[in-house]
Length: 111
Image 1 (tube, helix red, strand yellow):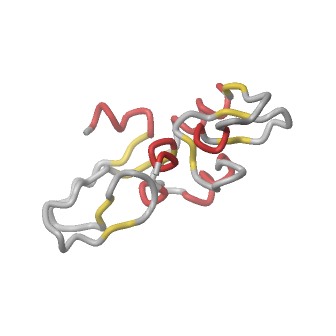
Image 2: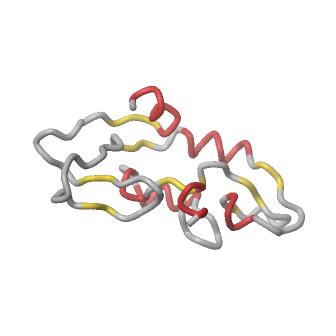
Image 3: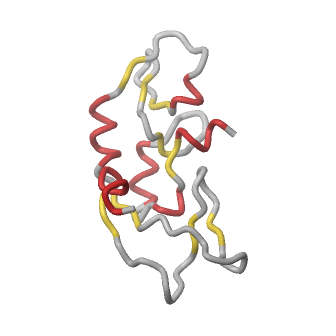
């Protein structure tokens, strides 16, 4: 599913209620690249495909990049509990899970 590659896994967000104010108006997920329609509605890249009047939303992108998230931890075995949301598998807290938290913009530096 191409949509998963364009949104952040909801299980990563530390304050999902706040983050949802920046969700795509069509799929209700947090976009990795925020764009807006002619009315200013926030969209993810997937949902904005084949739409006219789409423009990059740098202000919302800046806010989204500062949302607090937890570490993306890949499971080391099939018994890890999965949290749905996005193209990355996120495991629930385990003894060997990283306890890093930070901003979305710092995920790649951490992983």
